[in-house]
Length: 276
Image (cartoon, rainbow, N blue to C red):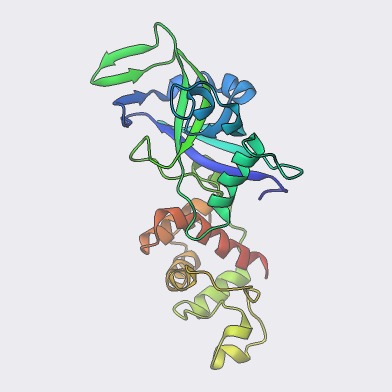
């Protein structure tokens, strides 16, 4: 949640990558139509709001679950920030609110989270298809929607998540103090050095300070985070990596952390630093 809003981030298309239908959408195609998408477009489940469920049965607007907030381009890729509907009261069955609640619950309230992948929907104008190797969709496209499906339409694009990715993540810089770096130098290699004091043992348990509060309950990624954290702190303290979310996320990835988790770990480390 960001300011009480249900926010998701995702890379929706990457030029040079053919989807399951053999189509390659040019970055210009979506970028040139971003205003239409932002002002009139939507986020839905599996394109069912447009194509029906089952497909061909007619439009089903109850499957619209949100709206785009921002579109950013980085090279061949188009990234989207979207907001998922958040009903003020219990939504009726077969409503947009019910569909939005189902999606959000699967993404944030179950373990492991549901995997949803983006798929662009729009209308190709008559001059909008250029035939070459595969089908390259050029700039003559009306982009109206992104559907979230549990099967990836684009094999190289990651799943939708609640943490900033790509250019959205770059907007945040880790605000680590000198004290954090000093402590990192002193404690790097100690897997429990930044844990809450109440869960430490031995010498670390008698220290007068700790960077993290006692967790409400351990999560299944805690051990992985602890193992990778010391290496990342060492690199931060020595200046080997930039103190940005992207830089730290890449460092976690180099430590063997799965890509879907690297930004979560980077933000967790940032949160520890801000408590000094």
